[in-house]
Every structure is written in C-alpha cells, then in structure tokens.
Length: 284
Image 1 (cartoon, rainbow, N blue to C red):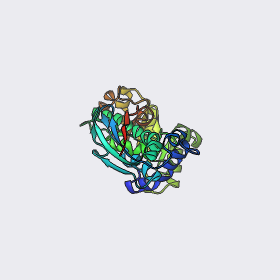
Image 2 (cartoon, rainbow, N blue to C red):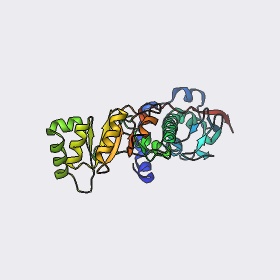
Image 3 (cartoon, one colour):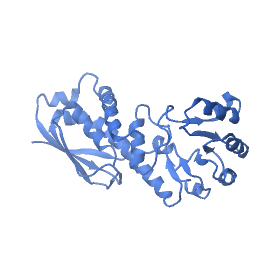
Image 4 (tube, rainbow, N blue to C red):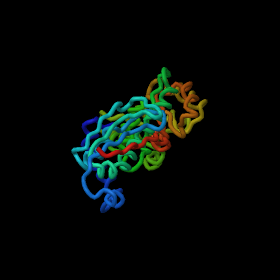
C-alpha cells in the first residue's frame, strides 16, 4: 500500500477524472437556481453505524473546485461513527457545495463501506494469529482509495499491483510447464529480495510448491480439512495463505486451519456503501 504522501499525490488526478465525469460542461441545475456567488453552509451527516474513511479525499473534491471551501471534521479516518452523527461542517460558495456533493459522497461512501466491512471481518480473526488481506479485485481507478480503506478498517494489503510481487497462479504454472519450472524461472528472473508466492489447489501441488522453494503458498478454494493437511505438510517451511470465496459468513471456519493469512476479494468487491449525506444547506 502506498503511504499517505503518495496517496495525496495520486488522488488529485483521479478526483479530477471523477469530477469531469459528473460535470462535462456545467451543472445545469445549480446554475439555473444560483447565478452568482452566495456563501452557504451544509452539514455532513452519517445515516448508519460504521467506520468512516476517505475524509481527506472528500474534502479534496471541494478544494479542487474552490480552494476557499472550508471543511471542519469532527472525526478522523478509522473512527467508528453512528447513525445521525454530525461528522463535518462545510462552508463556502453554495454553487461549489452543490456541484461537488455527489462526487465527494461517492468517494466517502465507497471507502467508508469498505472500511466498515473490513472491520467486521477483521474482528472475526481477532486473537487468531491469522492476518486479513485484500486482493487486486478492486474498482478500476479506485485501487489506491480502496486499499487505503481496507487498512483503515483493520485489514492488511496484499500486493498493490502486478509490479509489486511474484504470484504464480494456475495459468502461470500452466504456461511454465509445472510448479517446479515456474518457481525456478521466477527465482532466476526476479530480484532476490522478492518473495515468490505459488497458488495451489491440491495437496500434491502443495508438496510440489514446498519442494520447489516457494516462500508463500496460497491454498486456493481448498476444503477446511485439506487446508489443515496442507498447513501440516508445509510445516513452517513457507508462509501460508488461504484464498477463494472468503466472506464474513465463512471466515470463522478458516481460523482452525492455522494459516498465516487469509485474503478476501469481498472486502473490496462486495462491501456495501456506508450511507452518508449532505444535509441542511443554508445561505449565510
């Protein structure tokens, strides 16, 4: 996961793309009822319990439209919020408050929804010794925001993108002609500082991966019983990761297997939004 400084450097371009998507030429509705500058204020209200995330991205939407917009937050990213809680005040040009509303809320609701869902799943792994990971199953052009939201919810990031680490999945293995060949080729090509992860679906493949010298072995779509056998077979010679249809509903069953990590695409692709709203707009 990129650090907060890199997040800020990357965010502007993506926020501007979202604003251009929503305002191709003008905001016809706002311009029709508000033909000139008028100072106003509006409140950010939480409409359900959850974990807030994306406040700086939310604020940046309005700052890009007008740097004079003032936003006062009463919470910070990662905080628990409750239904009906007043979490921010915005003051500025009413036209800007109206124009930026939907784009800002889209970012904040999406990121807060992921943080909320992640927090719920992470709580199920508490004190288990198994760490929760996300995946690359993210919304196009939203990965930097969504992976940040996972961390705010108490999860951990898997590799950020294809340049971030070696993961040999079934098709890589098929292309290389087997696990041993794939691992050998990866060791010859990649830097010695990179770990090599291998995806396996059977106990036989697991044995091959261990013998080939894989650093991490991903147990993909295995039964709980076979995962227990795989962890015992590996015997600490490699880190272990469980993957495949991991959700809030079935993750408790995985804890007993003793895997080091569990990765869940659902954290980013299936988390519902956290309902938030800008309310009580008034002229000053």
